[in-house]
Amino acid sequence: MKVLITGICGFVGSALAESLLERHENIDVSGIDNLMRPGSETNRTRLRKLGVAFAHGDIRAASDLEHLPAADWVVDAAANPSVLAGVRGSSSSRQLFEHNLIGLVNILEYCKVHAAGLLLLSSSRVYSIPALASIPLKVDARAFRLDDSAQLPPGLSQRGIGPGFCTIPPISLYGATKLAAETVALEYGAAFDFPVWVNRCGVLAGPGQFGTADQGIFSYWINAHLRHRVLRYIGFDGTGKQVRDAFHPRDLASLLDAQMRTERSGGQRVYTAGGGPENAMSLAELTEWCDERFGPHRPQAAPRPRNYDIPWMVMDSGGAERDFGWRVEIPIEAILNQIASHAEKNPDWLDTSGV
Image 1 (cartoon, rainbow, N blue to C red):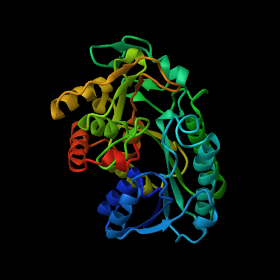
Image 2: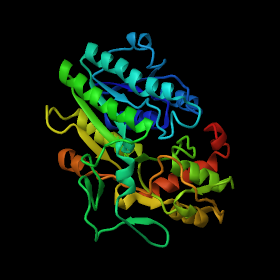
Image 3: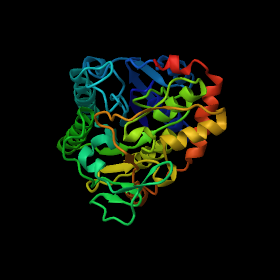
């Protein structure tokens, strides 16, 4: 089996490549990356040592994909991953759409030519911000929790948010590109008869992630705490009670592997994947964990919220468990310990990440 990974030198792309190689004896993994993300060059040498064929190119340029070898499957891990992309930061709104939509169309044309299946890594941020803000929550000392006594809206259960949760705008410019990408990918697959799986991923986390305040929050928080960089609890009264769940790319790789092995046509094609309630924690709880590991470091309170901030996001992976027998195996404690060990061994990691 031949697999092409776009964005292969990023944290997720490189981790998926390594994990898929470990899972298969007869697999050929290649990839393309424009090396735009600070730190991505560090993964290039590691991938080559694993026998991964690398092409320096940009998926926004159709000609950069023309000479790539044919693959059976494409894993698209090349999109801009920040919910603030196009609004704040280094990328413009036009660049956001070029990365997440124009680049995707070029990938889909590649799939059409080579009859390759597509595994699209989508996002938990395709959901309606007002609907997310209206999720019934209760507050304990350190975190927001789902209020199990309230009536829950469609698509939300005690296990978290599923594919059926509301996607009515506003969902952010970033979320709009990801939701549009899902539709375009599924339509291409139906029109040109190649399989497409869409996975709305929660927060992916692990050692070697290029963490910033806007993405890779677990890696960023641990590295910044260890180095006594300024940390801020933004919004929600500046208390750090906002909650996310996390899962490791190695667990994601097992889901993608199961999907590539599935010959089912039709039926459900969009799944949610994340750490679930067992792998969820608030920023305040993460700070407490860091205090115990590294010693105390107090974040600053910044009560004023930003656009697109939400109080709680936990993914329900029940559909993936039902259809593929998939469950998260790596607990959040192990993920945090791996990130912390990497941070201790790499004192310049935030600089490498462009922070």
